[in-house]
Amino acid sequence: MSAVKGRKHDQDIGSVSHWLRELKAGDDSAVDAIWTRYYQRVVDFAIRKMKINPDRAVDEEDIAQLTMHRFCLNAASGHYPNLDDRHQLWDLLVVFTLNRIRKHLRACNTLKRSGS
Image (cartoon, one colour):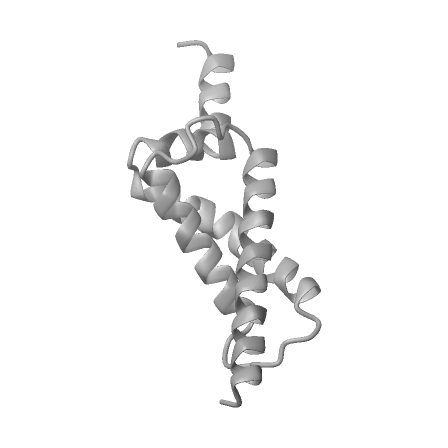
């Protein structure tokens, strides 16, 4: 194997595209790599979007954990066969995060209306 080809392979191992392929194949180390790369970014995004949070029992880190957990379960189950790169992954994580925030806020409003 040439040195250039070896370097390309090493770079590929650290790429999000590689991790997505491995995640789809059931590799648990890909879950760890994606989680490590994106968890704090999802937390930071949730912080920016949850300026008003009526129930601090659920915070931005909870939202990020739920987002990452759901994504990893779904991806490992084959729900995203066309998910191939970091841009698509980030777009999907943004949608998941926004949906989790909306669900949380709806639950807070429902509790508030019911008087609980």
